[in-house]
Amino acid sequence: MAAMGRISARIGAVAESATLAIDAKAKAMKAAGEDVVGFGAGEPDFPTPAHIVEAAAAACRDPRNHRYGPVAGMPELRAAIAAKTARDSGLQVKANQVLVTNGGKHAIYNALATLLDPGDEVLVPAPYWTTYPEAIALAGGVPVVVATDQSTGYRATIDQLEAARTPRTKVLLFVSPSNPTGAVYPRDQVEALGRWALEHGLWVLTDEIYEHLVYGEATAHSMPVVVPDLADRCVVVNGVAKTYAMTGWRVGWIVGPADVVAGATNLQSHQTSNVAAVSQQAALAAVSGPLDDVAAMRDVYDGRRRRIVELLRAIPGIECPEPEGAFYVFPSVKGVLGRDVAGRTPASSLDLAAVVLEEAKVAVVPGEAFGAPGYFRLSYALGDDDLVEGVTRLAKLLAG
Ligand SMILES: Cc1ncc(COP(=O)(O)O)c(C=O)c1O
Image: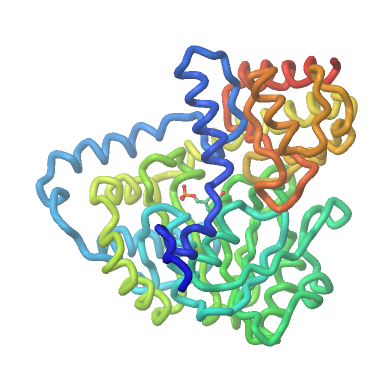
């Protein structure tokens, strides 16, 4: 009889989050006194807006926030999320269609665990956010990666999705604006994908966490708004982390059909219970407050976006499309691979990222983490001086 493993096969198969690992390595190098510029984490460099912090500070002093609360979230917050959803995307939902989770990541896992039976397939357009395939597998599903490239602006087409669809396909994972490419789907494409999903009886898990971070002419369109008939088979994921510079507070949510939300709430009742009450109070202040701070941060990101694209395009061997949303650039580094870099010959973006971190003290995430070898992801949610310093170091290193 085969010996039983010390850890389960299910958990043994999970890869560490590459983005968090790189961020941790960069932060450890910084703590050890090294001068590292970190483009790794998808984390705003701004502090959380003051009125949100004040609401949390007041909440700390109120003993009602020292207790367990309803698993699905404070009723005021669920209602405020429903109102915010109507305000920002136009989707009309009731408070019982909202489940407050420990961040968007938790929302994604709980939604998948609620929808998937073992072997159910989920279509995941690549380059994908690194957590999606792992969360699908943990939930018992099978990620089916659908490769997209620059020729379609990293937007999945119906033909590509159709080629990957099987009788076991249950869910399409959709994200716009996208991490890692910054791609934003125009309305007609959102509509086409939504209609296609509806026609084939698929569910859509749509991740709207970057809804406010769009630039130029781009607009984020919510699939169940564009295709209202899909609403009964659509789960929206969102959260405060990116919009309000609140990554550390850990508040996200699911908005979806009441039966799915009830199922996910039962799961959460045995898993984490309610999200920390003080964080919920902070999220309440965020989603029910004005969007001025959000607009101001978006303007700053927009300036950095243009700057980083311009600087990267000036580096021989790097090709950098202009992203339309989120706060990432996703340049190709294929033109650099196989060349001499600081006496080494990196053959993959994974190798190159390691050389860049060691030699230039610049942390980037290699495309391998997103199912797209040959690319780097750089977050431009960092200070302007760091941004210029980091890309300048990269340019110097690659110039030899
Ligand atoms: C596409 C996408 N969805 C969801 C999340 C989850 O964010 P959080 O768990 O911090 O709310 C992230 C964070 O990087 C993301 O990039």
